[in-house]
Image (cartoon, rainbow, N blue to C red):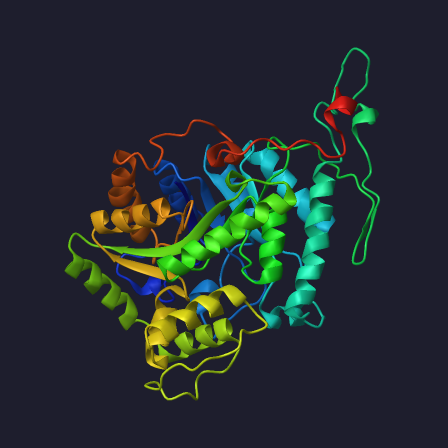
Amino acid sequence: MHLGVFVLGTGNHIAGWRYPGAADSFQSLPVIQEIARTAERGKFDLLFLGDSLVAGVNDHPSFTVRFEPLTMLAALAATTTHVGLGATSSTTYGEPFLVARAFASLDHLSGGRAAWNAVTSSGAKAAANFGREHPRHDARYEVAEEFVDVVRGLWDCWDDGAILADRETGQYIDGSKVRSLDHEGRFFKVKGPLNIGRTPQGQPIILQAGSSDVGLALAARTADVVFSVVQDLEEAKLAYRALKDRLPGYGRKDSDIAVLPGVMPVIGATDAEAREKLNTLQSFVTGGNAHSMLANRLGIDVSGFPPDDLVPDLPLPDTSHGFARAMLAKAKRENMTWRDLLNLTGAARGHWVICGTPVAIADTLEEWFRAEAADGFNILPPYFPGGFDDFVDQVVPILQERGLFRRDYTGTTLREHLGLERPANRLFPPAASG
């Protein structure tokens, strides 16, 4: 299986920073470097940084204060050697040329470990920071389709071997191996090429997390890794198969995409100890931040609903379909009240939470992996560094003993970790470049 770690604020629990011994600042490079060292010690495929373009100071403050992710990953590239380095960058509030250049730079700086999480920015509040109106859900994906194609095209504008740096002839660049993109589309007009050569991976890895129909179509066509939101094994199996079944339509096969559900493991020496740890974390959740996060996930103000009323059937919001769909399905399946749903949101922002001993956690992950509900997992430690240390030191060795996870890296690039081939350059077919 493949394993990523989701680094968000001071922990993925909405109040994880309050846990005894937890880091309480995400503006500390030493803290982030320690997380990266732990990821490499655990032989993780990927360290992934979530991002936001808006400061929710009063909503979920521990997630607000953070470094710009590409700047942070450039620093980590200098202090790590193997773990993949992934970050979010918006297709709604970005520019293809800048995104392509930034991730190509990171791929070079890291020796082939860069990954771009192409997101459409579900939060409408971000629009105010760019002097724009926030587009509707499907309109954002129309832009994203073209945006991703332009970025990939720019990555292909340089062929391998274009930079000669021949001291004898004085020729630095082979002009026959560099082309402009000359893209003119509905949303973007981009000439190219980039002012940086072809990257070690050929193209950085593309990550996506869309779960709407248009989001899944984009993922099936372009993504290498898909982050999914899950709450139920049977539903996860159906969603996994539905995505994989889309791939042949784009000339792709099952192994071309790794599906990694997000999961928050809360680990204790006994089940009782693990539950007590989760109870402690939950005791830090306030009504205000839980209500704010749930409102964000469902796209409605939930503060006025009686807490002991059952959650009714609700339409999917114009924000993120994945979280709303998974949470509302769980609420209906388990007859949850609004209080229950608030507790779920407070724990992991709507992601799946598993609580128990290292063996129980490993058993659950193995069950999902063997059932073809996942190709691995995006681990969401509730707090750093201890919550991540628990997983790496106690669960990973069990997965290794069972032959489910690598004991050491066998390559140096993220593509190699994921078992993906270096992509051919579409602007320079083999016959032309040979």
